[in-house]
Image (cartoon, rainbow, N blue to C red; front, side, top):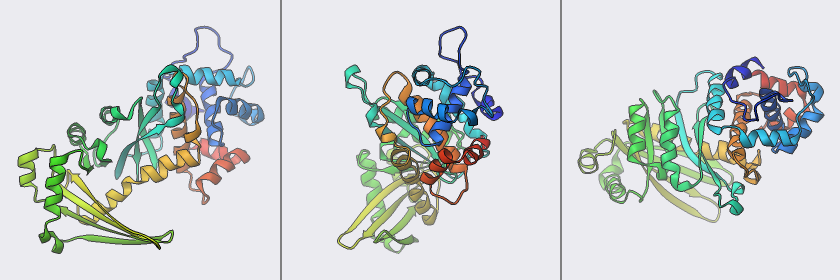
Length: 364
C-alpha cells in the first residue's frame, strides 16, 4: 500500500465528518482489485471484497470487515473527480518516464451514462494516450462532444509535451490547440478535413499537384484479416504561400497519407491530409499517422469490449467520471505486465490467481 498511499494521500474523503467504518484508501484499493479482476459495479466490489477478504487482509487493515455495496457507491458518487484525476497522474508517474514518442488525444462517449430523467447528457471522456508505452497519461470529462476542443486545451495543461508529437483527429485541429502544443515544447500532427474549408482546399491542391508524383514518398503494405492495405505518405515543406494566407501557429510542413484497402469483394481508397509543426520524413509521418489509431484500437476498443465500459450504467453524481478513471488505472497496470497472454486472459488471471493479482499491484 505504500506506493498507493503516496499517490492518493491528498485525496479528500467525501463522506461526512466523523468516524468512518472503512478507510478511504482501502475502499479505493479494493475497488481497483475488483476492476483488475473483471468487476465493474459497486455490487461487484462488495462481492469481490467478501470473497477475497482473506487475501485483502494480507495488506489492508479491514478493522471493521469489508465495505458494503452502498459504501462503494456512495464514495464514487461523491468523490471529487478533479482530485481523483490529479492523483491518477501521480499514479502514472510512478511507472517511470512516459513522456516520449506519440501522444494521441481523442474522445469517447460513455453512452449508457445518459440520464434523460435528469436532463443529463452522456459523459464524454477525452484521454491522452502514450502510443509507445500504451498508457493513459491523463483524462478529462465533458458533458457534450461539442465541448471537446475546449476540454483538450485544458487536458494539454496537465501534460509535459517536450520531446513528444501530439496527434488529434480533425475535430481538434484548432489554432489554439496547435499553439498550446508548440508553446509547451511539443510538436503536432493534426488531421485536416473540410471543417477548415479554405485551408483544406489549399493543402490538398498543393499535395495533389502532379509535380509531387515523383517526390520522395514512403509506402508500406500489410496483409491481414483477408485484405491488403497499402499506405503511401508524403511530406512537403513548401508552405510559404499557405502560411502567408492562413498563418497557422507553428506550421512547418504539410503531409498526406493515401490508404488503399483491397478485400475480396471491395477496394477502397482514402486520402488524409495533415498539418505538421516539424518537417518529418515521409516515413515518420506514416508511422505517426498510424500510431494515432492506437487510441481507438488499444484504448477505446479495450474499454468497450474487454472491460465492458460501453454497458456501464453509472449515472449518479460523479460516479461515471470516477469509475472511468479507475478503469484507466487498471488498464495501465495490465499494460505494464509483460505476461504472454491476451489482455482478456490477464483480467481472468487476476480474478483466478491471487499471485497474479499481487504481481499487478506490486507494480504500483
